[in-house]
Image (cartoon, rainbow over all chains, first blue to last red; front, side):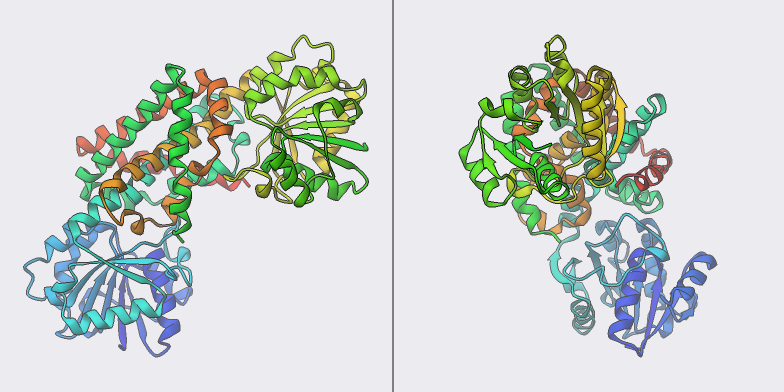
Length: 283
Length: 283
């Protein structure tokens, strides 16, 4: 592996670049972005060695695509058109069905590996990139059997070297499950932020009373709308289903309160405390 | 100040005990609890110096009440009955209206200071007590004018010594505002946990896909039902109001998705990103 092309050099791509370069000091990392400003920032931060364009991809041993999922769907066929016979293209999108679908019949489908590294922070852009982001984190690989075995091996080594554990899943199950453990959390957080901000417009000093519990619950509301709008769009049906279940649970909690059924409220919370054991397993 | 009585020696009381003792090595900290097991644990952890009972309170210079808010409402009049002329009683409850109300006409009302330290973690019990919990945190004091000036001064010195900043507020506003920035966060987190746990019953490995974002959003769902049920009960009207606003916002978000109005979804998230600046101010 000599020439790596990063399409998108924000939190996800930039953090890949840092750790790959650390493990492989001889590789040349090329950055591709719509915005020249992003490329300059990435050069300044030493995330990339050189600027490049899509036309240079024919020289790539590896291309990592970490841009909003609508842009990935649009661009991925073109990237595969340009990749060499031995080149590997990896994506890092939070949705998998639409991305896998768009290259389903592409003649170079076997050069592509569909991935979702479950890692990140609420920050975005090249300045958000950090070393070690992927250590101990799960990388979900979809339709592994559709990728050339040799390129699978290459990708696995890369992920192992930066400390990731691997899980295999089909794209439909991925999108269905990730709606619960990731997409819904973002909406619950954004709407909590909105509810309190709206209230604070009329009531002064309300945020003066906020503590670390509020900060934790609302943290994801700092996330990038440019990243998340296309995720919700691509995973619309699953996300709506999780939202309906969540709203029903909140509604039911409210009704228990209205009926003064506080013993049942106690039970609801006690049953959910079980999340402790589950969270102990999450890094 | 020589004899301090802690009624309840969990996360809140225990953390007070640690830092007060650090600043005042000569004080004797007496522990009072319904459960002998808790007292033994608190002795073992050096949170308290001695076990005591409610009858000993006549010897107290200071009593700190940090037990569930329903127990505070029940016990506070008795504690005030027993306190000496110069003794100070402080509570740490997450609701203030019912607590202030129950001692409104008590002959020793001036010996009581109603407080809500905005500090904590999702853990509970004596083992959850930590040093430095209150550094930089806000303590909301209600109806300060109803407490003897000398005892106000004594309390302020104590809070300043352990690093707290003070805000004054009336109990009605306190309960109204805290419903937004604390009580609602707990419900949103508990119901998020419930929604995902319910789903995980039918779908294996769903938690294998959960990352730090989910962990952060659902953290408060580890909180103690014994603490939180009486809080929701005492602050019922305000909490129901915040829940209705939150459910409406979620409902509206869902409808925007159903109508494919993703540009408005983008705007909603972008407006809420403003939470970044607000959270920078929260420790």
